[in-house]
Length: 384
Ligand SMILES: Nc1ncnc2c1ncn2[C@@H]1O[C@H](COP(=O)(O)OP(=O)(O)OP(=O)(O)O)[C@@H](O)[C@H]1O
Image 1 (cartoon, rainbow, N blue to C red):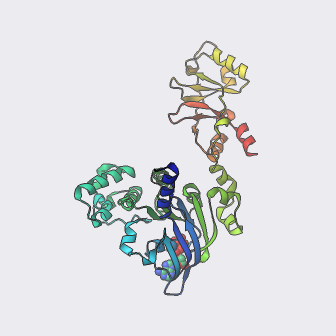
Image 2: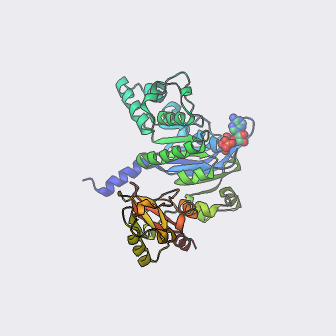
Image 3: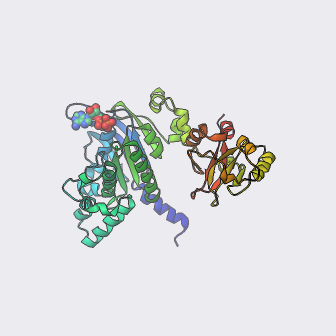
């Protein structure tokens, strides 16, 4: 009989087989440079681990030793119970997707052929390859019309998506990503990071990602390894723990002066803090709105459209001056520059509130419908 516990054990065993363990690993290049010295580190299966640290501290070397693009000088790396140096290098790399900073696409091959690289090596039937390419293009959010183009005909962000699709083609359990978003502009980078998180929530792969950027590390990492020189680990922890209890001055400096703001970015609004607020429909009369405001003792009112979406803010002074019989929608409302989503983090909430009329911001659900308001007073109380 297969019990739930037994099923869970089997699942864990399967996942553990993709944990990556560094056991006293060193790498000395032929010119004598010691890139990594006696590294001990266990990267858990099914998690996204970020390697971050100053330039030249050995992050890329560490990453490239996992798929044997660099050989180890001493020590051992195991994936599950397999020693990578004893595995066949070609076989090993088929189970490990690899994404580089400048996508590394083959310039004379179409996008479709680039994505199909590993399936072709594995001699999949043509129909299976075509179906997989279509599936991947959709998965990474590329327009299907692009697959007949060549890499130079794509933007940097599109090329990175193709690089990711190619790395995922044979559904490898492990994905190595070396500064995958460093070469694109900040807006595209944010999109790509969000996409990676969305994909990882579905895929649950063992991902190792190298970056210089501590904000990117905090956003993406289930765990973060902060490297000091020669591949020494200053701290290996979850983002929350790194911010709450940095191990030493080096970590404090690396995280930066705005550590408190970074902590806020990791905390979400508590649904209990969302206040119903005072709101009226645009079709209500000024007189109705005044009565509601007086009852609630608020400084203004949130005006909603017929789909219950926030239209703007109307303060008491403007209401007082208006004709009591006119409709609210005829008055000039103060719009918000942002909407806060119910799953927003406290850093975004604070930023938005700083410029909000009436010191309150409407909070909306996935469809943009009004759930209530969060106020500066409430947030300050929570943070103090
Ligand atoms: N092929 C090589 N030969 C000699 N030294 C090398 C070689 N590759 C890297 N190094 C050196 O090894 C050290 C670690 O390099 P590595 O590229 O792993 O660091 P990194 O943390 O990824 O740096 P960056 O963030 O600048 O990419 C550096 O001092 C680098 O100069």
